Length: 415
Image 1 (tube, rainbow, N blue to C red):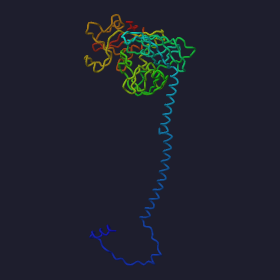
Image 2 (image 1 turned 30 degrees about the vertical axis):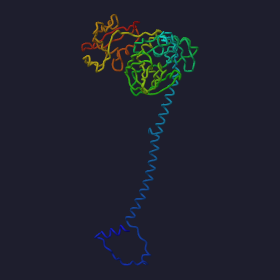
Image 3 (image 1 turned 90 degrees about the vertical axis):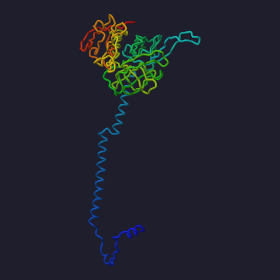
Image 4 (image 1 turned 180 degrees about the vertical axis):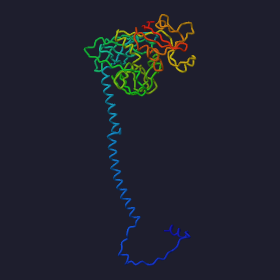
């Protein structure tokens, strides 16, 4: 009221009007007729209510339609459930081919008085069956030099003793692989794994790792993806003095715990695409696996001959990258460069398959048959896809020209 009075005092256009007194009795006989504006407002309110009801019904219908046909929350839940069922099926099927490997080995240790004495060590790892006759693939470091006895435990808990070590790659080899043979199956039917094609794996592809975690939790299953490929690492056991150089590995975030070494890395088709071999210390979920294509030649050799033979070419080389190509002033940045020797020796071993093929220092080997040598596949990895005795065609760049040469792969010399 005070504000209204103030407004009136300050408004120079304000007037006080005197109105004629109305006839009250006459007004009582009439009702106020609604104005045109009021009628319009009422109509709008009714229309709004009507459209609101129609809109609500339509929205509910659309929601139900989308719920049935679109990947909404219900659909996503179905996808998650299907993936879980898929993983469970893979774990069940592949798990029956995965074994726990318990190893006893002999070594020496220095006692308090500085005298070296024999010492018996116990260790554990994982392996997987590749034939119903009892051939098993595992890591070289799972069955170290000096292994005296090996026992494997099947998925159903059956322990099989007297397992034979068929062969293991040399400690200097970039392939951390060993083969075992069950000598007494105790009437058990062994189911081999399905071997896949690791060259088809891409970064982001789903994988499962199965292994004997910590040497006591048999057939532990972890899931993840392929995080990278073509990784080169220096690997060694905790507190160990020996260091291994491993090349062309898959990197995965599927947990590879201690004891999982030698276990399979499996794709969503239930096929083995890698041999789990190492984990990065001081990091989370950075594990490494040997692509199974890099050991298919070894697998075929063992299955055919019952012994491990590594194919051998006989060259000393470096794997080319853009930086190394620049360092050597080369126009090619992929392939295996046979480095010219500077110490009087030769990078092509005399009498080797490489010499027989006419390979010379300064050559760049770009293919073995149709396998390209690049950042995913080294020359060594390409060669291990073949067996001893296989004839291969090498594609070579020499003095800017591409030539080919054929040679027969031989077994790696014992020395």
